[in-house]
Image (tube, rainbow, N blue to C red; front, side):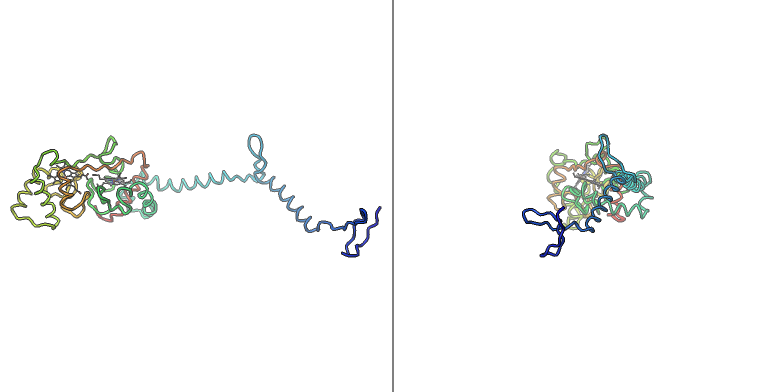
Length: 290
Ligand code: HEC
Ligand code: HEC
């Protein structure tokens, strides 16, 4: 047995081993570190026993506590679904009059509507629904096809001049191109419509003959007074809203070449809940405008 002794330089004990005059100091790992490592080791073993851990052939060891993150996620998704289903189901099953009066529903509509409208409708109608050339303003203009909630939801569902079998169908005839009216008559009608905007003053005679032309050719779709008819989808020609432009040349173009806008059908692309939500959203944007 070699002799343990105190090292004269460091003041520490040696292990007693000596190799060619070199002695080894006895510096054991501090107790505190041992204690720490032991506790951590025990904790790790305990943790793998309690929690899901070891992989197996056909699964994994689920742990004695039965904690399951997948389960937790499934649970919270199911709860979110139920919460959503609450209003989702109401949107589909309750009539619009009830829904429009319900603050909770309208909060959901105002919250969810902008993103849904932005993703699907804004490309044509604009983010504020104020329209773009060729695409009507649906935030303020009188609705060509009718502005009660059921009608609007139906317009969104089937579309206008769309590929849906039940599509709404509307067409402004090409009076010039198809030679139903001569160039002078078309000009007279264009002037008349511009004059209704207060942009031009016609003589009483010009107004009278234009009115006759209008009654004979246009009133069947746009109404006697030119204020539009939801049955034909023909717009009001006496107000400030124009899908294709309010200047004389755009109006003349509409009468000469005709117009036929296409609004896609959303059935199949949006759920019934989303379609009804959008109808409420659009009508809410309009305030009380019919
Ligand atoms: C590809 C372009 C396009 C997209 C996308 C589009 N629309 Fe339209 N929409 C139109 C056009 C064009 C008309 C007018 C059709 C016509 O000439 O009668 C129209 C008409 C309408 C009308 C009837 C307006 C009236 O005066 O009666 C409503 C309501 C409407 N759109 C809502 C929507 C909603 C909601 C969306 C989104 C889900 C949407 N639109 C997406 C092009 C579009
Ligand atoms: C067969 C029905 C029909 C007849 C007849 C008809 N229109 Fe139209 N008109 C429409 C429809 C539908 C539209 C909407 C087209 C669209 O938005 O795609 C329209 C649109 C227009 C527009 C464009 C409105 C805008 O917002 O830009 C003008 C202008 C117009 N009509 C004038 C006339 C005049 C003038 C006559 C008579 C010579 C006439 N229409 C006869 C159905 C008709």
